[in-house]
Image (cartoon, helix red, strand yellow):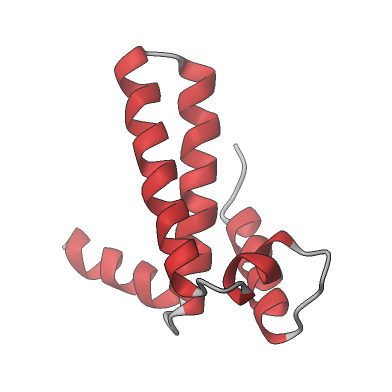
Length: 97
């Protein structure tokens, strides 16, 4: 089983791309374009829809792929709006009780 270190590493990359934009970076380009945060939110909506369709179709591999896409874009949206991933984890921890 893969640990949450993959998410930690991804979070670090997202943070770096927002702080140190690179012209060749998908993440940097996504939030620095004309639409800014709106483009990230559009991607979250698009990926959520694709995830729902994958679930409805029962395509196991596509469900995994779309879940990864959704998680990726959700993380970008969080960071772009000043929310730390640890804050989300803390909230989940509070709800677990």
